[in-house]
Length: 156
Ligand code: SF4
Ligand code: SF4
Image (cartoon, rainbow, N blue to C red; front, side, top):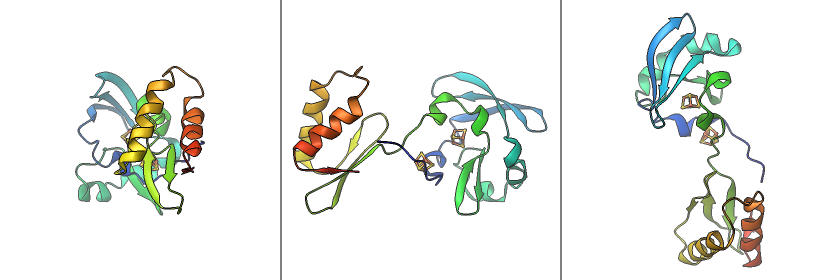
């Protein structure tokens, strides 16, 4: 399934402590550390986001958010997308939505293939499928989707 980020900013709302700014080294350039992996990186505010970056009003109202997050119209954007750490760039909050036969949403799967669902039957099927399909399988997401569809779920 292709992942489309809706630019809602939800995933960055509590990452203020995890994307640490060590020091400012230029008007729009910062030495930073991705705390969870201990990886240093240089953040440069994207050319087209400098205007919104300079207004930190929203950030004052959201103290737990990553310091590089800013609202822009109906979106909430990463202002350093070009230089953000790999785990930010490749993060996918939902790669599958699972619906029952009535079309009711009963589960969501993240990019790390973690299933979030209260449905014990679905959870059991998911766990069994993960045990059977090798982790390194390039088409693992498509294969998991097929397993779910084989059990009568709809995946979108
Ligand atoms: S990855 Fe998901 S939570 Fe994060 S901004 Fe995109 S849609 Fe929102
Ligand atoms: S660097 Fe960008 S993508 Fe990563 S947490 Fe901060 S705002 Fe989100």
